[in-house]
Image (tube, rainbow, N blue to C red; front, side, top):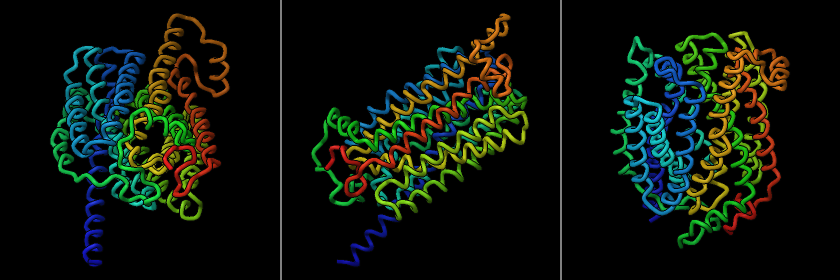
Length: 457
């Protein structure tokens, strides 16, 4: 009997790594489809004449739909077969990515990118909880970091593919969207056959809730009184405010304010993302798990998140104000390394701080928080500030006095480097993230690492 049990555990472990590999590869495709649009912004702008404000609206539309759909998928994910739900999401986002290539107006482009948000909200909300039920707590930091490492790799691939495929002399931006969208339609079938594990099977018995279904309202009440979880959402939102705007606007920013070509900008960003982002993601998971073997509960994860956010503000500011290509490129690399250092630990906090039957709901609410207060604001805000300052300059009016003072202090032009001025908000957001995560270090914990006040005991 013991041998049978051991063999079963070994098969489960082998299959768990198969699921991790499958979800990680699909997450790579997810982020390629998401970030290629940012790389295509200069080509779309040149072809259509859309302004920074209009393209920022398209970026924000994706974010808002993604945000609004996440709680719904969180509710479904805590109740139904997660692999099958994910398969539907992959099909929707891939079809919508390809459809954006056929858009003939701003409204059509807006609708297509919004639909991408529906499918990606499904995937991003459900996948982490599925992984949490395949791996024990002491491995989740590294597991989440492996899964999340595809964000910078996908971003890099999106930048490079967008920079080269989107060139009118190659395939053009419309065909580029078709090329990256079609493979997902084939990949959707892979997830439908994934086994559904028992919820909470990898958690200690004391941390599991009864099998009875939790109502939507009760679930959110438990989340909102969980102080550690709320602080994680706040810190993650501040990080997303900064990183979301930087990633979306970086190709256009490096072109207009730094003087690089579209291909050069996307190549630099691809190298920074795949190098700095991937190394940061993997290092964060390793360090977080190592610290939690020495420290009680989840404080090691909070520590990594706080340090990464606070330190990242420095090279991000340097990248914005520097005129030296070597300096701002290296600073961008370091910024992405430090920001992604906290990515795996932050996602581990979300699944470790809540009860097993609330994990998908918790991830869905996290998505709402980080996009409502994060890039749902910053993407369009940066575009609006840039367009406003540029129009003032074209009309012969000086920029507002506070803007002029700040720009002179940072040695950037408020009339020609308008994106750089707008991006000065991002280091401030990173410092705010460090404060929120730092407060998480003093949150009291119950046995097993679930924060007191979560209503789950």
